[in-house]
Image 1 (tube, rainbow, N blue to C red):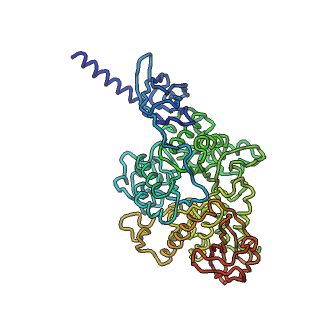
Image 2: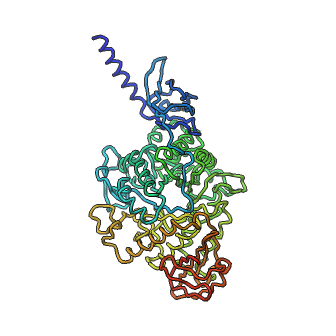
Length: 613
């Protein structure tokens, strides 16, 4: 009896002690990773003097580190290639007594994981804002214990209930449009008291927000997407996290974030990164400043912050089977950290494509970050790809403004002409709009013929296109500058919606026609080799007509964009350099045949995408 009482007492005492450790991040890793020394962030009450030990073949304790806060312990492990997958017991000793035991999972990697395929110029992205796409599981609309639990579809800044299941339910629709990649805005937990729907104020980097689903459901979504010929790209936030994060409310060290006491806002002056005359304070306020009081600016100069962020990115790629990364607010992070982060990812996954957001129309600023760029300050980043905001805004200007030069298309022409600044100009994401920009159809005055011209351009221009959900059916935002309206609910994503993009119910004639136009071009693009291994030549626009060619050794595509309200006559001889001995071209959109041996009439407000023969 005494033995039983002692055992029960020991177990109760152990459970009380064990509960002192509430976080081990990451809680798993893989055998065979080049990055084989992960540093575990361990969080609990007064654990900094505990001694972690392991007795597992192929897994060793390299070192332990402590910071100012006694609630943190950093444990670096080494996982050798001969380690067997399984559960590693981490024993924590205090005063030569085991006071806690935690499991750490070591897994086998998927076959050929390191050499996984990624996205490239052959691909097209569907950008999804999860909370506003489709509510596939109403049981997770309200999750008890979360700081924001209300659902209000009429509230621009409220949660609307879209989730991962809603995306899974409509993968066939996305694939049928011709997409080959899906980019979801962040799905990780955002347990903020309000305005949490957007996902960019993470409060748990290792956990899918329960209002979207679970880690396992996201992994299922990736697998189901792959079955339908689509990869999934993860939206990475390195610069900041939500103020409700446990390691923000109880920081490991005074330098865990920038401007800890003042929460100084970023000045948003991107030129401070490249400006050779920039003051130290201006540079610090740009990269160290907070986006707002609910977005803590992480200090990547702290080596433990840097390792945490690097390992989290590697973890999601390996865990979920991702095909690429998109990095939010790229240049706001410490630039030396960014070089280390990109190089580490690419050392582990040599084929991985990563696209960074540098939200500027200045190509000189954007190109600074691309791998291979010879910068005057000798800074070398390893970022493969960037988002081309210059083309986005140039296209809207070309379609809506007049020009004193030869053509309004000069805005586009000059944007593309700046490609000499990029070591890899084709590896750019091009897009008419996204979740941070007013809807394309709204920006061009809801002019359907102009929309067609713009869509044809983004389907055929150098780079790889990304389209925001709903662009294919002319979605708008009536209030300019409204994030909530830009990210409007997708038609048919909720039960009893009066309009349904998936079935066509309630869509106008133009909306239905736009879907067909969009899908026809995108599916054609998917099977056209010049977008994966071709080149481009464009001609100085004249009389509001812009002509460019996409071609390789086997195929030539001639794109003609006429933004005039009248028909225009084109002399093919001016373009003989690319037309060469071809006699005619067949328009991909209308199937009409155009003679290339004599003057050709280009209908008003029309895009021609001609396959030359």
